[in-house]
Length: 209
Image 1: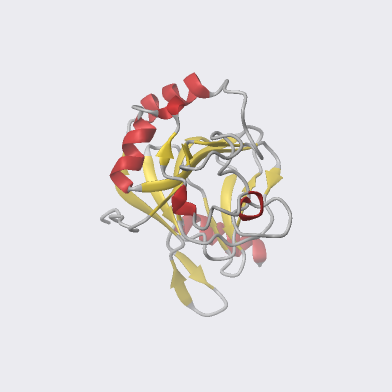
Image 2: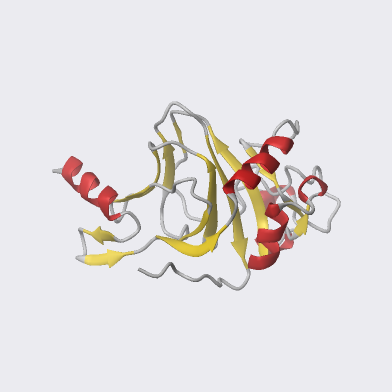
């Protein structure tokens, strides 16, 4: 029965059914913002050899503070956990929106343009190796995702609502309600890289059906 539910949810994509409560849920929306995926991949490839990363993440934006490294300062868990979260490492950082300055490597790129149009903050390039998963967690605020490199077996999973969503590398920006409990699972044989950021104003236009 569980397998059949997953199959149905995958067909529904972003419009999934909450089997427990009998409600439609929409944790992922494709917006009508679409960008040149070829150019994004080219600009990403030109920066991919940059040596700095943390947890498979590279910071596209930095803060006004002189922290440790502008290309890793915004990476990892944000909310304090008494260990190595951003708020533990940098007490001066109170909100994610303080990471709002474009790093030199991405200045005047399409990444820069997207962030300007969305008033984006805490932008990162997040790579997951094959056959890996995150623990189930929640984020402080929703995220925007644009897939640069993926495979058909890479999914968002929202366990409470039994929702599974794949974001294709089609150039579209997807709004994801990551304040709900979720994980990401890469079951494929190739890495997955998403361009991920927040937006101050939560302005997004949903694709017209």
